[in-house]
Length: 192
Image (cartoon, rainbow, N blue to C red; front, side, top):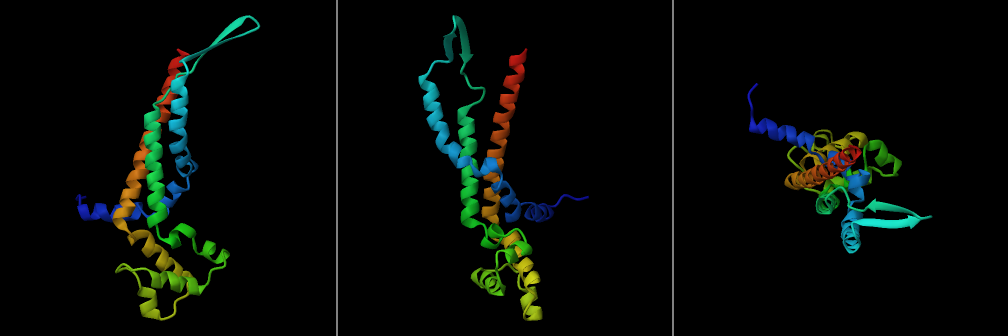
């Protein structure tokens, strides 16, 4: 088997599609990252004002709690920043047909008609892969037309932006995994 850059790029086109980025974007952690982007600086500032140990007494018995957090707030903040950038790029650049519908059944359930498909088709510049159904058969079935437009927009719309969005999500995910593994290691090491 020969290694080919063209083959690698074709494979990455099928792996990094807007519909697959939508799965990342819909993840609860990724979707709420902007909250962490706002909350982390506030909590960090709050924790910097208090001491590392909280000591108090209940019925004459002294209790001490260690308030040092097991992970880096900076890395957590940067992770949230990359997730937020990925979400921002997804919202701005992903095609609306992919953003709004997961399949043709979802399109029909929302009460959409052939008119909306015509609107999707006429609004965008199509790749050279698009237009086979319209040009060869005249009026296409809505199901076929939906999937023709959906797949074209999913695979060929803003290709470079799609890779940048994937990179943002990938960096955010890598940093989150680092923070998560650091926390697990901290808990396990505290047992011994």
